Length: 84
Image (cartoon, rainbow, N blue to C red):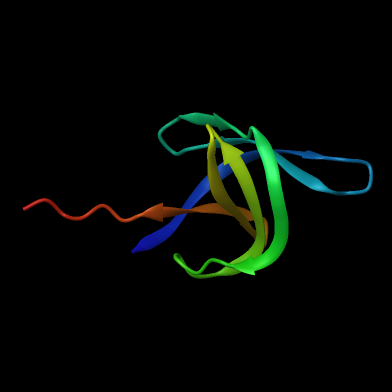
């Protein structure tokens, strides 16, 4: 199962208004640079719920789905099972 993990995102907006994520900042202070933007489309988050613009980015060699929904950014984060 997954949940929405809201993140801070540094974006670049060009002269015609196209948005490109540059860096993703995690709540714990870690910063991840977006190596490459692979795809942009309106889509639903099938794992965490919600919809908006989905930016498929390459971060550290892995594809990451980054969503923008009404000005807020989130990624699909895995739920950590409770320890017994």
